[in-house]
Length: 180
Ligand SMILES: CC(C)(COP(=O)(O)OP(=O)(O)OC[C@H]1O[C@@H](n2cnc3c(N)ncnc32)[C@H](O)[C@@H]1OP(=O)(O)O)[C@@H](O)C(=O)NCCC(=O)NCCS
Image 1 (cartoon, helix red, strand yellow):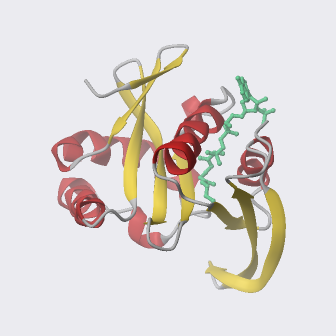
Image 2: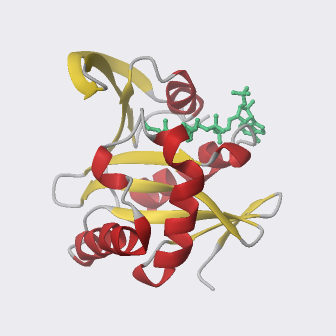
């Protein structure tokens, strides 16, 4: 129900509080792969932690803000895409994404992110979408590039991980930009 078919057995669906157990199991499979590249608060531990992350985004969605969209491959939750931020008033949003290793290399996040961009620009009338990633996150930057985003700048040492400061890239696309 309320699913977007991405082809190859993949579906996008809202990721909700009711998925807490499934989300916790997925995070256990994804945690070490994803940890260097996403905010620490996203990688909650256990079912209670997963529920609390999902509740936080549900509250944000209720305010028409950021939200989580899950990516299922067959019956297995394998990752997702998200509006990290979403502001109809400002006309801007930021996209995010993550996958467990088994789902990488299939184009799922690129296809899923296109669905989010179409929603933001065509249904909601937003003007600008951003993508922020660690400057050495080659796979994430490649998604931004495939989405037709422009690398607009690098924030110096804006991301601390493992006791080291990393640069952060800001990619952006406008509703009026050509879509690949
Ligand atoms: C970032 C991340 C989601 C990218 O995953 P990904 O699988 O590389 O990205 P996509 O889903 O867009 O797939 C692209 C890959 O699928 C391949 N592909 C296959 N079919 C494709 C299609 N129809 N369209 C586009 N790409 C396709 C591409 O060639 C590419 O593979 P390659 O890099 O080996 O050439 C993933 O690496 C990840 O979860 N990393 C850890 C968490 C993270 O960094 N999150 C982002 C924080 S900013």
